[in-house]
Image (cartoon, rainbow, N blue to C red; front, side, top):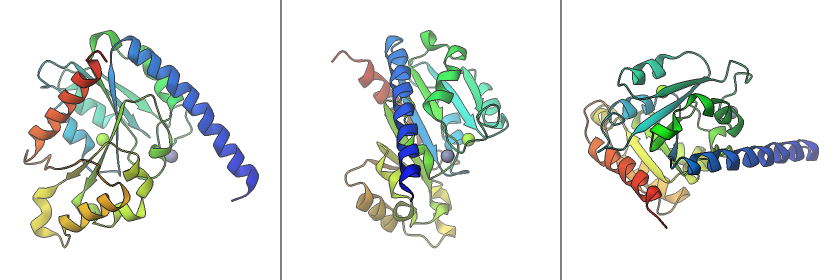
Length: 226
Ligand code: MG
Ligand code: ZN
């Protein structure tokens, strides 16, 4: 890559980090734990939220729904009577393939921060750049569906390294696929040693209790005095 291009990218990421810290301050002031939820398109992020977000042992959750266009996912989650704010990157953000701190900042006024304990930011489906842009989150979770194959951690290592939890979704489909979950997990471990993993099926509900507990614990842990 040309040196000037490297320089421009570094400056953009510095600017992003400055705004992410401002977001972080606002979330802290309101006592909101923030999870940046990332995956390739179609891995099941919205379904995993549908399964959990309305029933979190008293934890009040909200969702910031990032998509290039449309509000299908936000509409699904609104039906559960949790606060949902749609952020479309095609509206004023050049159709970006990820959320950045500035986009999240633009949505803060629309979020009822004083009424929620947990904000899940569902990022744009993409395995590449969401990992590069902090948005002010406490924790990062990524979903890898077994239908994506077992090689994704090796092909998109940054994404797998950047997260605090890897959810392996769609395990109900394993009998129909030539994929080894053991090899997938070994590949995750190879690029991010020690990262927690969870095997779930958003469709059947298998493993969903562990995901719900993780969200509850993550919120309560962040809320506890240091
Ligand atoms: Mg979605
Ligand atoms: Zn992008």
